[in-house]
Amino acid sequence: MTDTAQILPTTTLEQNPQNTSKKPLLGVNVDHVATLRQARGVSYPSPLAAALLCEKAGADGITIHLREDRRHIQDADVYEMAGQLTTRMNLEMAATTEMLEIACQVKPYWVCLVPEKRAELTTEGGLDVAGQLASLTDYVSQLQAAGIKVSLFIDPEDKQIEAAVNCSADAIELHTGSYAEAGLAGNTDRVNVELERIKNAVVTAKRVDSKLLVNAGHGLTRDNVHAIAQIDGIYELNIGHALIADALFVGIEQAVIMMKTAMHR
Image 1 (cartoon, rainbow, N blue to C red):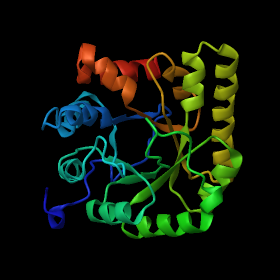
Image 2 (image 1 turned 135 degrees about the vertical axis):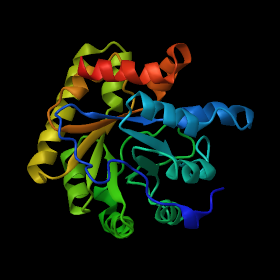
Image 3 (image 1 turned 120 degrees about the vertical axis):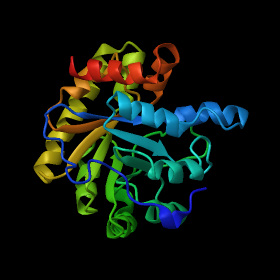
Image 4 (image 1 turned 135 degrees about the horizontal axis):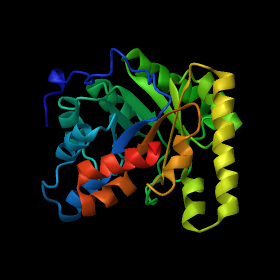
Protein backbone atom coordinates (compact mmCIF):
# COMPACT_ATOMS: atom_id res chain seq x y z
CA MET A 1 0.00 0.00 0.00
CA THR A 2 1.18 3.54 -0.72
CA ASP A 3 2.48 5.44 2.28
CA THR A 4 -0.48 7.58 3.34
CA ALA A 5 1.85 10.41 4.31
CA GLN A 6 2.69 10.83 0.64
CA ILE A 7 -0.93 11.01 -0.53
CA LEU A 8 -1.92 14.32 -2.05
CA PRO A 9 -5.37 15.31 -3.35
CA THR A 10 -5.49 14.70 -7.07
CA THR A 11 -7.41 16.50 -9.74
CA THR A 12 -6.81 18.77 -12.65
CA LEU A 13 -10.30 20.17 -12.02
CA GLU A 14 -9.65 21.48 -8.50
CA GLN A 15 -8.97 24.99 -9.72
CA ASN A 16 -12.15 24.98 -11.81
CA PRO A 17 -14.54 22.29 -10.54
CA GLN A 18 -17.68 23.83 -11.97
CA ASN A 19 -19.27 22.48 -15.12
CA THR A 20 -19.74 25.57 -17.27
CA SER A 21 -21.50 23.58 -20.00
CA LYS A 22 -25.15 22.59 -19.73
CA LYS A 23 -24.12 19.08 -20.75
CA PRO A 24 -23.64 16.86 -17.70
CA LEU A 25 -20.22 15.44 -16.94
CA LEU A 26 -19.54 11.70 -16.98
CA GLY A 27 -18.09 10.04 -13.93
CA VAL A 28 -17.07 6.44 -14.57
CA ASN A 29 -17.34 3.85 -11.81
CA VAL A 30 -14.65 1.16 -12.16
CA ASP A 31 -15.81 -1.05 -9.27
CA HIS A 32 -16.62 -3.95 -11.55
CA VAL A 33 -13.12 -4.12 -12.93
CA ALA A 34 -12.23 -4.96 -9.35
CA THR A 35 -15.15 -7.42 -9.18
CA LEU A 36 -13.57 -9.42 -11.99
CA ARG A 37 -10.19 -9.34 -10.25
CA GLN A 38 -11.60 -10.43 -6.89
CA ALA A 39 -13.47 -13.34 -8.50
CA ARG A 40 -10.09 -15.07 -8.87
CA GLY A 41 -8.20 -13.38 -6.07
CA VAL A 42 -5.43 -12.30 -8.43
CA SER A 43 -3.77 -8.95 -9.16
CA TYR A 44 -5.48 -8.31 -12.51
CA PRO A 45 -7.32 -6.60 -14.09
CA SER A 46 -6.20 -3.34 -12.54
CA PRO A 47 -8.92 -0.80 -11.60
CA LEU A 48 -6.27 1.91 -11.78
CA ALA A 49 -5.29 0.97 -15.34
CA ALA A 50 -8.97 0.99 -16.29
CA ALA A 51 -9.48 4.38 -14.64
CA LEU A 52 -6.55 5.92 -16.49
CA LEU A 53 -7.88 4.62 -19.81
CA CYS A 54 -11.31 6.08 -18.98
CA GLU A 55 -9.72 9.46 -18.30
CA LYS A 56 -7.80 9.24 -21.56
CA ALA A 57 -11.08 8.59 -23.39
CA GLY A 58 -12.79 11.62 -21.87
CA ALA A 59 -14.20 10.59 -18.49
CA ASP A 60 -14.58 13.66 -16.30
CA GLY A 61 -14.03 11.79 -13.04
CA ILE A 62 -13.57 8.34 -11.54
CA THR A 63 -15.88 6.80 -8.96
CA ILE A 64 -14.95 3.92 -6.67
CA HIS A 65 -16.96 2.43 -3.81
CA LEU A 66 -14.96 1.14 -0.86
CA ARG A 67 -17.49 -1.12 0.79
CA GLU A 68 -17.30 -2.40 4.35
CA ASP A 69 -17.02 -5.98 3.07
CA ARG A 70 -14.36 -5.05 0.45
CA ARG A 71 -16.16 -7.13 -2.18
CA HIS A 72 -14.50 -5.30 -5.08
CA ILE A 73 -12.44 -2.15 -4.47
CA GLN A 74 -9.72 -2.66 -1.85
CA ASP A 75 -7.99 -0.12 0.37
CA ALA A 76 -4.84 -0.39 -1.75
CA ASP A 77 -6.83 0.62 -4.85
CA VAL A 78 -7.98 3.81 -3.15
CA TYR A 79 -4.49 4.87 -2.11
CA GLU A 80 -3.02 3.92 -5.49
CA MET A 81 -5.59 5.91 -7.45
CA ALA A 82 -5.27 8.92 -5.17
CA GLY A 83 -1.76 9.48 -6.40
CA GLN A 84 -2.33 8.87 -10.10
CA LEU A 85 -5.74 10.06 -11.30
CA THR A 86 -5.61 13.14 -13.49
CA THR A 87 -9.28 14.14 -13.11
CA ARG A 88 -10.84 13.68 -9.67
CA MET A 89 -11.77 10.83 -7.39
CA ASN A 90 -15.32 10.36 -6.13
CA LEU A 91 -15.06 7.95 -3.21
CA GLU A 92 -18.37 6.29 -2.37
CA MET A 93 -18.57 5.00 1.18
CA ALA A 94 -20.79 4.44 4.19
CA ALA A 95 -20.81 6.98 7.01
CA THR A 96 -18.67 4.94 9.41
CA THR A 97 -15.71 5.79 11.62
CA GLU A 98 -13.43 3.50 9.60
CA MET A 99 -14.33 5.17 6.31
CA LEU A 100 -13.96 8.65 7.76
CA GLU A 101 -10.39 7.84 8.78
CA ILE A 102 -9.56 6.52 5.30
CA ALA A 103 -11.15 9.49 3.54
CA CYS A 104 -9.28 11.99 5.72
CA GLN A 105 -6.00 10.25 4.84
CA VAL A 106 -6.66 9.99 1.11
CA LYS A 107 -8.50 13.30 0.70
CA PRO A 108 -10.43 12.49 -2.50
CA TYR A 109 -11.96 15.47 -4.27
CA TRP A 110 -15.44 14.07 -3.56
CA VAL A 111 -16.87 11.69 -1.01
CA CYS A 112 -20.35 10.38 -1.78
CA LEU A 113 -22.08 8.94 1.27
CA VAL A 114 -24.25 5.91 0.49
CA PRO A 115 -26.25 3.39 2.51
CA GLU A 116 -24.87 -0.14 2.74
CA LYS A 117 -26.32 -3.57 3.47
CA ARG A 118 -24.03 -6.60 3.47
CA ALA A 119 -26.57 -8.82 1.67
CA GLU A 120 -27.32 -6.43 -1.20
CA LEU A 121 -25.96 -7.02 -4.69
CA THR A 122 -25.73 -3.28 -5.27
CA THR A 123 -26.81 -0.15 -3.41
CA GLU A 124 -30.55 -0.43 -2.79
CA GLY A 125 -32.21 2.94 -2.39
CA GLY A 126 -30.87 6.23 -1.18
CA LEU A 127 -29.48 7.39 2.12
CA ASP A 128 -32.10 8.34 4.71
CA VAL A 129 -30.67 11.77 5.44
CA ALA A 130 -33.87 13.04 7.04
CA GLY A 131 -33.85 10.15 9.51
CA GLN A 132 -30.28 10.73 10.72
CA LEU A 133 -29.86 14.45 10.23
CA ALA A 134 -27.80 15.24 13.33
CA SER A 135 -25.23 12.45 12.89
CA LEU A 136 -24.84 13.05 9.16
CA THR A 137 -24.47 16.81 9.65
CA ASP A 138 -21.54 16.15 11.99
CA TYR A 139 -20.05 13.57 9.62
CA VAL A 140 -20.30 15.89 6.61
CA SER A 141 -18.70 18.67 8.65
CA GLN A 142 -15.70 16.48 9.51
CA LEU A 143 -15.13 15.59 5.87
CA GLN A 144 -15.41 19.20 4.77
CA ALA A 145 -12.98 20.25 7.50
CA ALA A 146 -10.47 17.92 5.82
CA GLY A 147 -10.98 19.76 2.51
CA ILE A 148 -13.27 17.15 0.95
CA LYS A 149 -16.45 18.00 -0.93
CA VAL A 150 -19.42 15.86 0.11
CA SER A 151 -22.29 14.42 -1.91
CA LEU A 152 -25.23 12.46 -0.51
CA PHE A 153 -26.78 9.61 -2.52
CA ILE A 154 -30.53 10.02 -2.04
CA ASP A 155 -33.86 9.07 -3.50
CA PRO A 156 -35.53 11.87 -5.51
CA GLU A 157 -37.74 12.98 -2.61
CA ASP A 158 -38.28 16.52 -1.37
CA LYS A 159 -37.71 15.66 2.30
CA GLN A 160 -34.35 14.04 1.53
CA ILE A 161 -33.26 16.96 -0.63
CA GLU A 162 -34.17 19.45 2.08
CA ALA A 163 -32.36 17.34 4.67
CA ALA A 164 -29.25 17.20 2.46
CA VAL A 165 -29.23 20.99 2.26
CA ASN A 166 -29.65 21.20 6.03
CA CYS A 167 -26.61 18.90 6.33
CA SER A 168 -24.63 21.49 4.32
CA ALA A 169 -23.80 18.91 1.65
CA ASP A 170 -22.04 20.27 -1.42
CA ALA A 171 -24.01 18.01 -3.77
CA ILE A 172 -26.62 15.31 -3.98
CA GLU A 173 -26.71 12.31 -6.27
CA LEU A 174 -30.23 11.32 -7.22
CA HIS A 175 -30.85 7.57 -7.26
CA THR A 176 -32.07 6.66 -10.78
CA GLY A 177 -32.54 2.95 -10.01
CA SER A 178 -36.35 2.94 -10.12
CA TYR A 179 -36.29 4.70 -13.49
CA ALA A 180 -33.78 2.18 -14.86
CA GLU A 181 -35.64 -0.84 -13.49
CA ALA A 182 -38.92 0.34 -15.03
CA GLY A 183 -37.21 0.50 -18.41
CA LEU A 184 -35.76 -2.98 -18.08
CA ALA A 185 -39.25 -4.25 -17.25
CA GLY A 186 -40.69 -2.57 -20.35
CA ASN A 187 -43.06 -0.49 -18.22
CA THR A 188 -43.23 2.73 -20.23
CA ASP A 189 -45.79 4.36 -17.97
CA ARG A 190 -43.60 3.78 -14.94
CA VAL A 191 -40.54 5.06 -16.79
CA ASN A 192 -42.37 8.33 -17.45
CA VAL A 193 -43.49 8.60 -13.82
CA GLU A 194 -39.96 8.02 -12.53
CA LEU A 195 -38.45 10.42 -15.07
CA GLU A 196 -40.87 13.14 -13.98
CA ARG A 197 -40.00 12.38 -10.35
CA ILE A 198 -36.31 12.96 -11.10
CA LYS A 199 -37.03 16.17 -13.01
CA ASN A 200 -39.12 17.49 -10.12
CA ALA A 201 -36.35 16.60 -7.68
CA VAL A 202 -33.85 18.68 -9.65
CA VAL A 203 -36.25 21.63 -9.62
CA THR A 204 -36.73 21.25 -5.87
CA ALA A 205 -32.99 21.07 -5.25
CA LYS A 206 -32.33 24.25 -7.21
CA ARG A 207 -35.20 26.02 -5.46
CA VAL A 208 -34.01 25.04 -1.99
CA ASP A 209 -30.35 25.82 -2.68
CA SER A 210 -29.34 27.24 -6.05
CA LYS A 211 -25.67 26.41 -5.39
CA LEU A 212 -26.27 22.72 -4.65
CA LEU A 213 -24.79 20.48 -7.34
CA VAL A 214 -27.18 17.78 -8.54
CA ASN A 215 -25.75 14.53 -9.85
CA ALA A 216 -27.57 11.35 -10.79
CA GLY A 217 -26.80 7.69 -11.22
CA HIS A 218 -27.58 4.01 -10.76
CA GLY A 219 -28.65 1.61 -13.48
CA LEU A 220 -28.00 4.05 -16.32
CA THR A 221 -27.15 2.57 -19.72
CA ARG A 222 -26.69 3.81 -23.27
CA ASP A 223 -30.36 2.98 -23.82
CA ASN A 224 -31.79 5.06 -20.99
CA VAL A 225 -29.21 7.74 -20.22
CA HIS A 226 -30.23 10.34 -22.79
CA ALA A 227 -33.48 11.38 -21.08
CA ILE A 228 -31.65 11.90 -17.78
CA ALA A 229 -28.80 13.78 -19.46
CA GLN A 230 -31.31 16.22 -20.97
CA ILE A 231 -32.62 17.37 -17.59
CA ASP A 232 -31.60 20.96 -17.03
CA GLY A 233 -29.62 21.28 -13.82
CA ILE A 234 -27.94 17.86 -13.79
CA TYR A 235 -24.23 18.38 -13.14
CA GLU A 236 -22.82 14.87 -13.52
CA LEU A 237 -23.92 11.31 -14.23
CA ASN A 238 -22.08 8.45 -12.54
CA ILE A 239 -22.16 5.25 -14.56
CA GLY A 240 -20.37 1.97 -13.96
CA HIS A 241 -21.94 -1.43 -14.52
CA ALA A 242 -23.35 -0.84 -18.01
CA LEU A 243 -20.21 0.93 -19.20
CA ILE A 244 -17.94 -1.88 -17.98
CA ALA A 245 -20.30 -4.37 -19.65
CA ASP A 246 -19.93 -2.49 -22.94
CA ALA A 247 -16.17 -2.53 -22.46
CA LEU A 248 -16.14 -6.33 -22.63
CA PHE A 249 -17.08 -6.06 -26.30
CA VAL A 250 -15.63 -2.76 -27.50
CA GLY A 251 -12.86 -1.90 -25.04
CA ILE A 252 -13.08 0.55 -22.16
CA GLU A 253 -12.00 3.66 -24.05
CA GLN A 254 -14.60 3.10 -26.75
CA ALA A 255 -17.20 2.34 -24.07
CA VAL A 256 -16.59 5.77 -22.52
CA ILE A 257 -16.88 7.45 -25.91
CA MET A 258 -20.11 5.57 -26.68
CA MET A 259 -21.65 6.52 -23.33
CA LYS A 260 -20.84 10.21 -23.80
CA THR A 261 -22.32 10.04 -27.29
CA ALA A 262 -25.51 8.48 -25.90
CA MET A 263 -25.71 11.21 -23.25
CA HIS A 264 -25.29 14.12 -25.64
CA ARG A 265 -26.73 12.91 -28.94
